[in-house]
Image 1: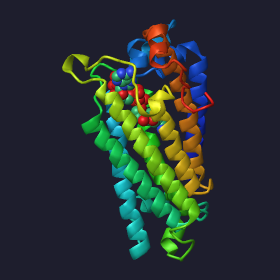
Image 2 (image 1 turned 180 degrees about the vertical axis):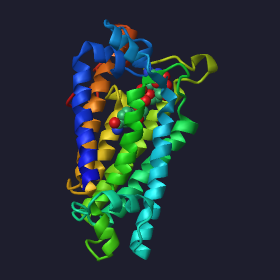
Image 3 (image 1 turned 30 degrees about the horizontal axis):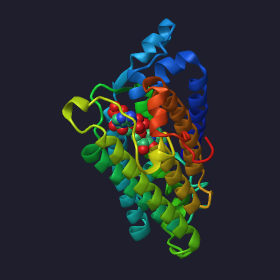
Image 4 (image 1 turned 90 degrees about the vertical axis):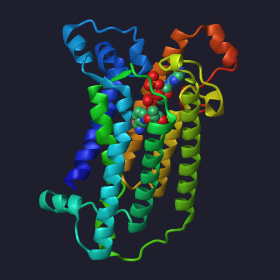
Length: 303
Ligand SMILES: NC(=O)c1ccc[n+]([C@@H]2O[C@H](COP(=O)([O-])OP(=O)(O)OC[C@H]3O[C@@H](n4cnc5c(N)ncnc54)[C@H](OP(=O)(O)O)[C@@H]3O)[C@@H](O)[C@H]2O)c1
């Protein structure tokens, strides 16, 4: 229970921080921007502390670490669930939790939801690992703030554990509950696969923009698939993926609800910065030629 409260509190605080970072110039200039937004950042920190803070960066292609660490947590979680359900024995994570935490709040998600949710998130992480190493062509010079790096590592670890923590006592008790196949689960899985497919396509489109070596760190206007209607369609797909997980849990999994809120707020903030970035780096004429009817930032028909 303490871990559930801890993860939810961290996610809520991060969501608030992300909104503050967008409003406060010094944080915007030092922490918020990453990747292309940071490489060509017009907002320079005006104070010494913000200038110091802005220097704490790591390469942006370390994004791959998020998915590798997330996938390792997922494998550990699968072993944990098998050990609990087949041998009624705690493995590594639950042994630690049983020592320092309580089992209050670990009954309201069913065993089936834990299994399907963890499987879907594991699939997502496997695809992201594959894309990070074999599809994407990240620039060697782009950076991100170390706070982004730590948030990313923590976020995926928390999401993986969040898929089963709130139902771990049901996993152990092995009681038959709702069936694996029901309309809500099927719709959630369909939405998950649909969003994953489009996210993959968008990432592939971005990587195809850098075909030759001298384009390795250049930026272009992406076209095709959901890029025709949105500036950051891969972010929209991410939101749909976390929405599909929440549908699977019928919005009863607190960690995943906080994860969805964080994803919507954080990616909406970044998509706003990305839209501004395109507007300042490409002429209005070029953008108009590519998208005569304009594009929404992140949510079709909304903003
Ligand atoms: N759930 C969350 O909270 C969360 C948070 C952040 C990201 N994500 C997910 O992680 C994935 C990657 O996010 P991201 O923020 O790294 O996306 P991004 O900034 O759009 O970058 C994705 C890749 O495309 C390249 N790229 C981007 N725009 C380009 C352009 N105009 N021309 C050429 N190449 C371009 C980037 O190169 P560079 O290496 O030069 O940047 C990078 O390799 C997304 O699917 C996103 O949904 C999730």
